[in-house]
Image (cartoon, rainbow, N blue to C red; front, side, top):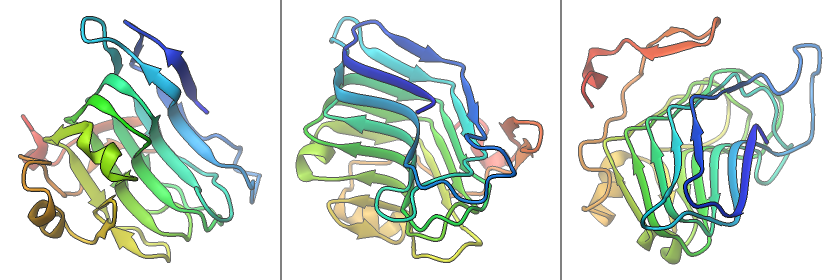
Amino acid sequence: YGVSVLGASPGTRVIGNKIHSPVTDTVTAVNFNFRGINVGSSGAGTAQDPLLLANNVIYNINMGSTSGAGAQGIYLDGASHVKVYHNTVAFNAAYTGAGTNVGIYATGTLGNVAIRNNIVSITKGGTGIKYGFFYNTAQTVNGITAERNNFHVASTQTGAQNYGYATTAYATQGAFQTAYPTMEGGSLTVNPQFANLVTGYLMPTNQALQGN
C-alpha cells in the first residue's frame, strides 16, 4: 500500500500525496497486489468528521499480481462517511501481471461515500481486465454517490476493457447510466492529456475537463 487507513478514522485527512513507481525499473515481475490508497477494515469517518481522500496522485503503477485482484488505485472496504474528491489515478506503465486493474475499487456494505471530481486514466497497466471503477455488490453501490468523475479506459495492453462495474460489468458509460441513471451525472470519459507523466505533473490539459 502507498497509504492505508484502518478502522474508525473520524476527521482523518489523506491529502496531496504522490504515490508512484512501487518497484524499480529493473524488476520485471512482482506477484503482489498493489493498492495506492487503502481504506480497509471498515474504515470510517462520521457525519460531522468524514474521512477525506483528496488531491492525491497515483501513477506509474508498475506492479500487480499475476492473477485475481491485480492493482487498484483507491480501495474502499466497508467504508462509511468517506469523501473521495479530486484524486488522479493513472495506469500509464506496462507490466506483466494478469490481475485486474481498477481505478477506484469498493466492496462490502458502504454508507455515505461520495466519489466526486476524480480522474482515472488506464492507458497501459497489466494484461488482465481493466475497469475505471469496480463496485462489488448492491450493498456497495447503494452506499455511494458518484458524479463529475472522468473514467478514461483505453489501454494498449491485452485484456478486456470496461467503463466500470456495479454488480456486473459495463463496457460503456451509456450502458452504466442506463442501469444507474442517478449516478455519474456530469461525468466524462475523455483522455485527460496529462501535462507531463514522466515528471509526475498530472495536470489535465484537455479543455473538456476544465471546471468539471
